[in-house]
Image 1 (cartoon, one colour):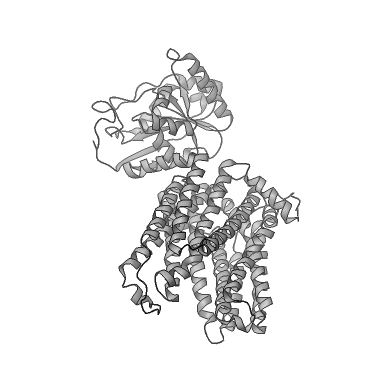
Image 2: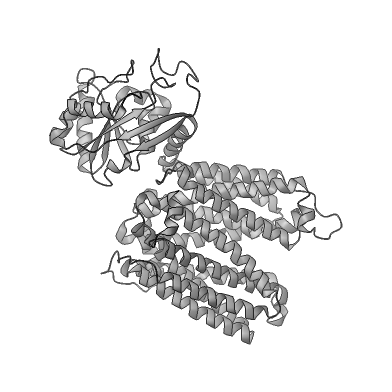
Length: 627
């Protein structure tokens, strides 16, 4: 069973998942019920236009994220998290009881006050929610856990939106909404009681109650790690992108497709299903580790399918001026193309967002993690406000909804290219991911023998020109490869190895200064707790057998005694990138594509025992007869 579904049977994840699901479900039942009520019965409560009221509701719900996220981040770092979650769920019960009173009195002011309080409760829950996952899940479970949370959240949003709209339209609809929201809040609290303890990350923290100074301070925490900060910008950009699309679904369904209100529901459902599908596929495509290579893949799909959505619009609309029923609408072939584009946008959005959330959680400082996530939430809210302003401004300037989708697609391409230019690690991982998912089928065994933290030297047989890329794809931690300095002259490989901070080396005869600098760099990397990978043969095999391991490994260990992890690549001999029967890369499709290969990792060898002869025997044993 996939790790992500196996998590649903474990107490360290299931109660948290149910708590989050009930909360997202409840938020959207209440929000959509209120929006529908004010859209169709606004004159009972106020002279304001329904459109103004709906936008006011959106602003009221998002305002608390600016006001309270920074404080919520501090609380989540200072206090035990499962208890904090139970407190927020008790607050939700109180807010829903107050909302029931607002409905019974038909008080618009009290309804909007409850909407603000629900936003505040969600703002308090956000940092503790994402900071708790890394405490209860192993690193190889983070992607799967985040995938389940994201897919579950979007399903909850969809079901909650539908439920809220249906309930409020019933006779005595406000009573039904009141009962359901109080019941959901109670179920969320009961689920939260099963969440295991998650100790405070920074119990001595002094709370700064000033939201403005603390928000600025939270931004400072997010900027400490450049990769984490840019991942946060990527997450915020996704919410910008999603907000543009979600806010335009009603107008697109009515004015472009010519459908009725059921068409709006269909668009929302298809988009949400796509997000859930993409999120769940992440764990499988990333082999359980934080795979940044999926992020560029996701961004490409977000732009391409948004462009196609623009290209396929406008579609035939109802010529009578009467909105088409769903069955009639689905008889138009062009509508199916729109639905395909939307499910594809959602799927690639899942590929984009899940690895970024997992990256933020795994690389954030533990004692500041919740405050970093709080800063992320503030930026998310800010980007959604900007998205709403951009959408309103462009539509007021005469843009159509499909043209707004076109602008968003172009902006997505520009923004993501800018982020990848700042952090080439994303593009590097994308190239590696493409290699092992299009040319090869990679299976890695013995991953548990790699140290979760701290230094080690990795040694492996050298079969082809892509060995380092394959090892890089299989290992969950970043690696510093020691590579022949000549390879840095090859354009594409030069980019890959420079951006992965590979260490160029030469023989003492060929380049004594380069060799000396290489051993200095290796020592510094190991002292900094990094993993260093070398090919002790010093050359790519041209006969399929291992060449004798050189003494460089002994020189490394004499200076910095660390454990050595032996590894063996299997199945690459005879591939396009190997030297079997002549020069490498001279015979395309020599073995076809999508060949099965394997990386086998053995138990670590102590520095005192790691002689070249011992290590060679270990690697030969791991490789076996399959070359």
